[in-house]
Length: 261
View 1 (cartoon, rainbow, N blue to C red):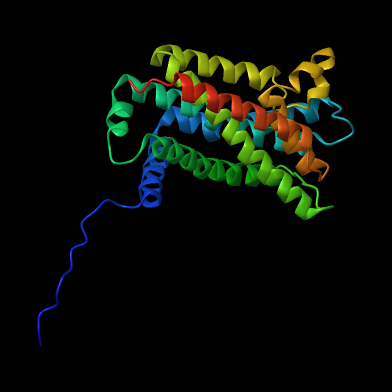
View 2 (view 1 turned 45 degrees about the vertical axis):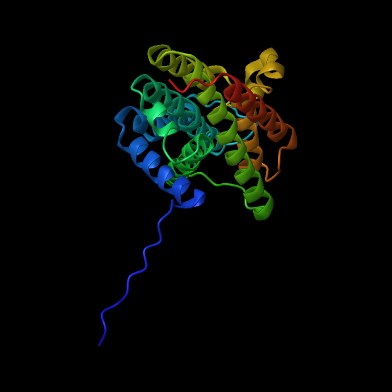
């Protein structure tokens, strides 16, 4: 019996394989980082549980809905924002500082592929977040609407996808123009401000006269799109268009200003 013949096939991997490998590595790094894991899962869980308990004790009226039914979609939106904006901005800022971005930019993976890998890694982490938070919400008695399941699913998927794109683009923009320390401070500050007053956790209608401005923020648009999908079983076209606009603006700003070192 003759020995097997090996036929080497020299050459680089395909673009798709390189991007998938990069996304897997990025996702593992994000989940191993304690601070990012805190932002991604622990803080949203605390906000959800604490908010539901406090609202039930105080008896806050949220447009006639139970607190858990309003807060759960809002906290799902908060989780998307925390990972897509804060975690991406901080991680990318320090990667620039230590020269990691520059080295990766000189690898066979094109720079566009590197950024695409980051986005895919984000989606993996976001899915994990949503699974955990949905489980917590259901344990607290959350009852998402089942009036129009297909419409709810479409609205939810579009909100998560466009929210991730918008906040990731803005996070990369911040990380690409500021020093790592400044990025860390600004990303956390923006996260706290939007969580408290950006219309992401609570409906924009609860902010009185400021609601007309908050609904145009990416946080307000993402929160409203999630609530419309999961509470009213509708696709909030206006909020989704706002997210598209923020994603386009962030992408243009990142493309024009991002510094690789």
